[in-house]
Image (cartoon, rainbow, N blue to C red; front, side, top):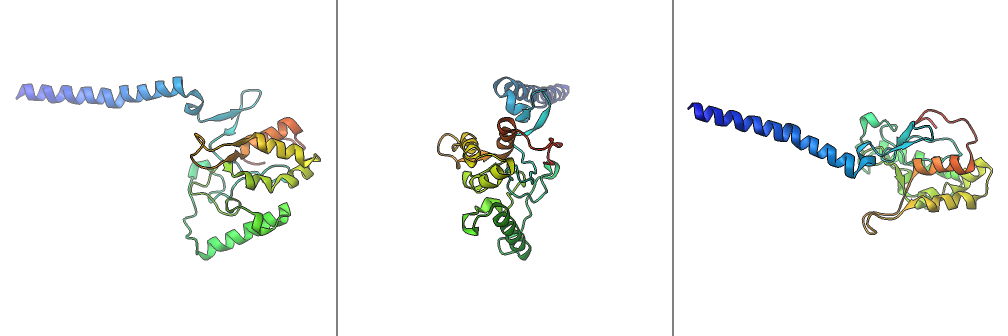
Length: 200
């Protein structure tokens, strides 16, 4: 009987060490060595080394000189990612979509037919950092006007920050809004002092 107890104890100890320690240590080491940027949260850092955000998490931009991200059901709060859970025929959802559509058409001066669905509907997680190129394109004139530059310069920045589908066939082309807005400030200059992350 004592032999069975010892065998059980050793089995428990070994599995605890393997799956409670060695396994996690191995994953951590692989992440740090093979994917150091992703393991750190895909952070974007300023010239002085400070973090200005993550490539994976949307931030709120509502000033006219910046590209605006996809709407968020959690007000861009990374601590509570999630959607609104409204169905497509829910009155509250339809009201929110109509209000967002009216805002975009008025702000960017484009007809409703040109507004992509990503500009009026929130993503499932509420923190989608990307927009399709079409959603960035309808904002170019507004951003250029607010910054006092030619639209062609802003459109060129959009083109340079448009990422192709993953591996060339997974998903769609996309633009990372935070990276694009940082590029705007870097290459065209910031018209107003930068505010804390998430409050631009």
